[in-house]
Length: 236
Ligand code: CA
Image 1 (tube, rainbow, N blue to C red):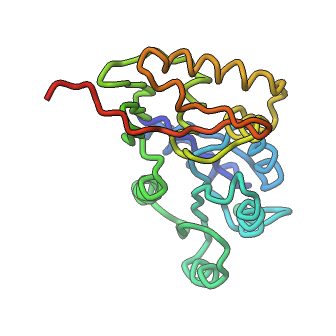
Image 2 (cartoon, rainbow, N blue to C red):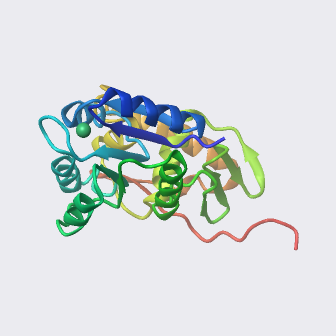
């Protein structure tokens, strides 16, 4: 039932296999990269919910990778757990301010791994049971279900991702390009007009409930989601 995706960056095939096995068994979606360079390429697409990064990698090290990601607005807050070979390395790393959220020393048990991942996902707000609420709109992130005023509403996958993004980052204006980067992924080549099409669809879906004007066009700048306080129509 959990669908969080985890990007595993580890050069040793054996450990990567073990990680994939444990994570898939726990129902996580696993993306693999055998180097930081490959990970950076994969991060141009849709972002995973969490990174599992080995410290010792050929080429760019795990620490350096995290440092780079923290400098990019898009990946600055991506939750990351660093795998280290010994406890003392973890101690050294903690002093580095590398931007890593948690450390796990090898060898570790799958149970410990899953506990750390769960805890970090919860802290970062990507837990599957999470619900986003804005006025009368609520999104169940685990079930991928949109609910308006207590009614389940059908929503297409792109509109869902768009609405999820807006609800997480409301009251700020995003350009079409920024929305493409964040909702479609950087390596997806679609025209900016595509954004307008899906914005229209989203409004259409919200309009019977009187909240289509929450998705606002900001002339010359882009779009913004501004939920208003509409009293719920539920019977008291
Ligand atoms: Ca390694």
